[in-house]
Image (cartoon, rainbow, N blue to C red; front, top):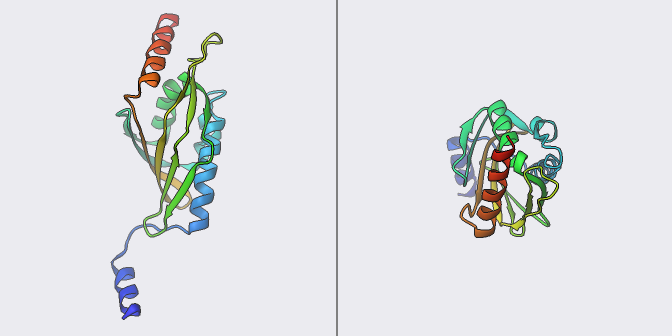
Length: 168
């Protein structure tokens, strides 16, 4: 009976898969490379090689789209421009091996929202969850979940975005 169930499952499963260890490694590398890009707003260099050319994204800030170049361009003008430090102590990485999904949670994720201004320091802690879908070791979908209405974060974003607009 167990063999029949396994064969039935395999015959109906057309999703990409991933080995558990590979998923954990990709999840940790993704977070490390993402964090590294904030200091210089150079995510194309730090995380770009991990993204599929046809990547799709859907985040809590209502940002949605497709395409690696579009994602990196949008990111460099938004989060990459506003945040100069991204700290994610002890993230948990879960892997759905049968659907090639990597779930990353960071309950004490802290960002410094500065807009690139030396006189700004707005440390905000907002828990987050990323769900990455992977195929051939490239991220094909990036879902991001956090509390977009978090009071300290929205206050810091509003203050820094106003200052960035005034400086433009």
